[in-house]
Structure formats: C-alpha cells, structure tokens
Length: 103
Ligand code: FES
Image (cartoon, rainbow, N blue to C red):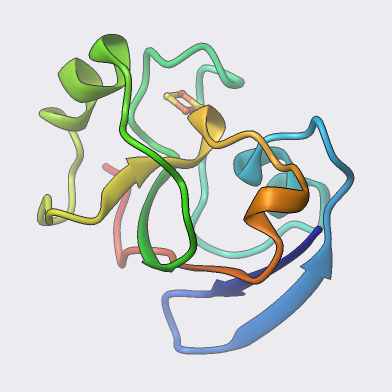
C-alpha cells in the first residue's frame, strides 16, 4: 500500500510498503528521519511515534495506549506507534507525520 511519510523537516515521501509490514518497518527500510524504533517493533519503546494525518487506522490496543503515555513529543489525539500499524490495502493512502523527537 502507498504510505506517505512526512519527515520532521517537512520532507514528504510516498513509499510502496508491502502488506503485512508495519508502518514503522516501511520507514526504517528506507532510513527515513525521525523514526528510531529502538525495540524493533515490540511495542515497548515508544520511539516509533507518529501522528496520523489521514487514513483509517482504527483504535490503538491497550498495550499501545500504555506506551503512548511515554512518547517524547507532544501526545495528540492522532498519536500512534507506527510499529502497531499493520500495512494492508485498507491503509492505502495513509499519511503520517513523524514528530521532531523520539527521546
Ligand atoms: Fe518500539 Fe514501536 S518500535 S514501540
């Protein structure tokens, strides 16, 4: 699915991310700025924080909600952990903004 990432400096990139990958993996694979993903997708680091600008991502699970309390940048209603967003056709056209900091 096509996922658009807006890096912290405002640079916008639309990538074709394979179904089954996480939105985090799509960013790491292309070495985008701003996603750290220290725990490698285990929902235990909160350094893969993104803001979802558009796209039907559903609601965060309980574990993700807990970790969202630890994000370094401002937590907003559209804050999500990108490792918990699984890419599928339903997410085609998703736009996420990467915050200025993950620490
Ligand atoms: Fe660690 Fe997402 S990569 S919480």
